[in-house]
Image (cartoon, rainbow, N blue to C red; front, top):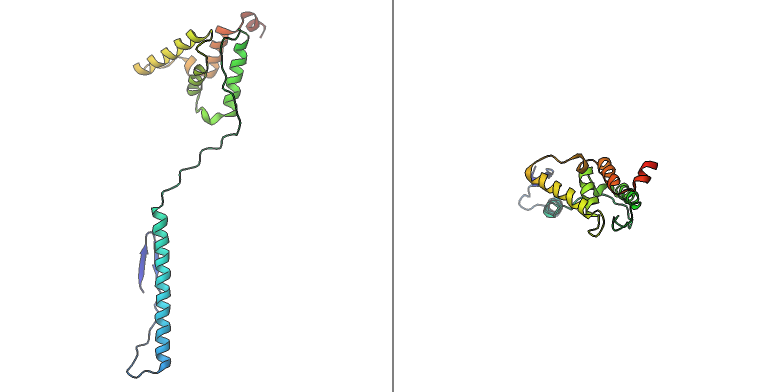
Length: 174
């Protein structure tokens, strides 16, 4: 039995007995011999095609995994700008809504908080507060120090933000 190795697949050729031709063999014997040889040729050609396909498939670059499904929503990034104090709650709610609609964009609170800080406009009343937390975050990261809870936990961040920028009378009523 002849064997061809085609990458991980083994192609086995069956044993087909071919009667030897004697001197002065009849035409029927010659025709039988030709049929056997044609059969061997067909088996070999099919084996070569299988090996060629396997080799071609193995050499093709593997397709990258499709990106995770993301909702086809056009969302405006929340922005805390020169808005009056009562807009602080709107900003926090907008951020939370954005995270709810695009959860794969933010693997954890730490990443989401950094994004929320980046959404605060540099012309807002919160620019110095934003700069303080971003500077603290960078300094702690560079020094290998742990981050404060405000930069690690969204609820703590939101509470700190609202305490700083929400109208105290509205906070009291809430």
